[in-house]
Amino acid sequence: GEGTTFRLTLLLGIAVAESDQATVPQIAAQRTPQVLIVEDNTINQEVLRRMVEQLGALPTVTNNGQEAVNALCRATYDIVLMDIQMPVLDGEKATRLIRDMGSTIVQPQIVALTASALRGDRERYLEAGMDDYLSKPVQLDDLRRVFLRRSVDERQAALASEESASNSGANIDWATIERLLFSLQLPKDQAATLVCELYEHELANQLHTLSAAIESDDRSLIARLAHKLRGGSRQLGANGLAAACMALEVAAKDPSATSLTDDIANVRASYTETWSLIQAQLQTMIAAH
Image 1 (cartoon, helix red, strand yellow):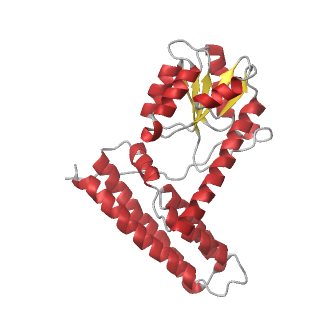
Image 2 (spheres, one colour):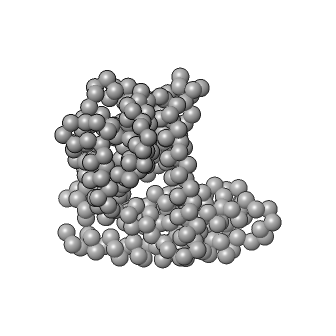
């Protein structure tokens, strides 16, 4: 019979309209942020939707807290813009329900939207599990600051994760792999097979190209290829491999580094260890179906 053809794009940029580039800075990220708007007023919904799109993110609109909880059970969102006063389920109760779900979902950044910021409101929102709040009417600059703050926090967390992986020897971010499997929207055994192929072939091919560059001692090319392999590794949850690639990239850019032998050896060893663990786990998933 015929096989199944899979297509997967791992790295996505954020598009900002050319006419907006002078006033709206691009938000640095590896994929388009997903933003859930939770607001019962249709005018506010439309204004927020347009602002989110102008900042290069992808909006989804819901009408109340219950719809927001349901949406987060079905999909992953990076930021939730949560109105406080809503029918069916208000913003505070919805936030508590979302936080109570813990690691069963990918927890988003939740930003309260309130028409009145009274003394003590901020503390109450934080206690409910919200991360920030904006006063209505929401201004584009204020929303931009929320997006940029998230981008900075995400970058710092990524660097901390890589440093931790390098220091502790931890290799695999299983939560990232679970999110990747879920995002493929395939039966789990098919998703696991595809991810196996990405590890076994895509990362292996990149490592082979990197090894060839090492043989020619082309430092500029080595740095670029190490950076590329690092990005692909992180997308696939291989944080230990990403950390080893980062060390190689830094060494390749250092004129005082006389040899990269140890650095490339660490990359190869990390790939071998990572692939062995990933393969065992994913093969178990495949065999279970």
